[in-house]
Length: 208
Image (cartoon, rainbow, N blue to C red; front, side, top):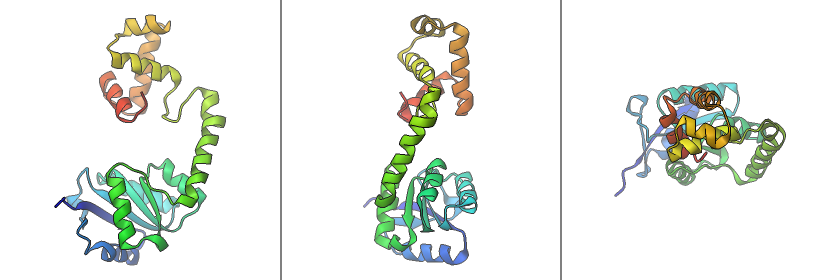
């Protein structure tokens, strides 16, 4: 039998937290854990009335306790809230009215496996918003949705292939200083240790 998925629960009010805990307490697929027992595989469940500044503050607090994947259960979930949650890196969204024990297990299991979950009626609007962002804001600046410019992507691909700074400069017709500055910009922006870490990060995230 597979180990239950660890779930850490927070809420904007005690009643919501108690209700969420009670709804999954008897599910063998999940195990509710306190903050001190959180590990990298733990999925966070955050119950809020709406995705506002308070909710995002609770999300940051949950992330600070090493919970990397968070599902927000919201009483009121609109297009603006979906976009704010997506920008904050939330892994799943669920309306409170749809948060039955079975549905909570489904969503937590999907998120634990690396999938993202958004209510179907809001997914189309989110995709449209992303397309508008790409077309009107990022593309004119030469930036992709990954946050990398085309130059940064090219440099990282060549580093991943094994090229050194001088060889990359020759391949792309840049100066060596430009190549070094490009790599420095990437490592600084994403808080990475060195060029090897930058390549590993870019590959893991599917940027290159």
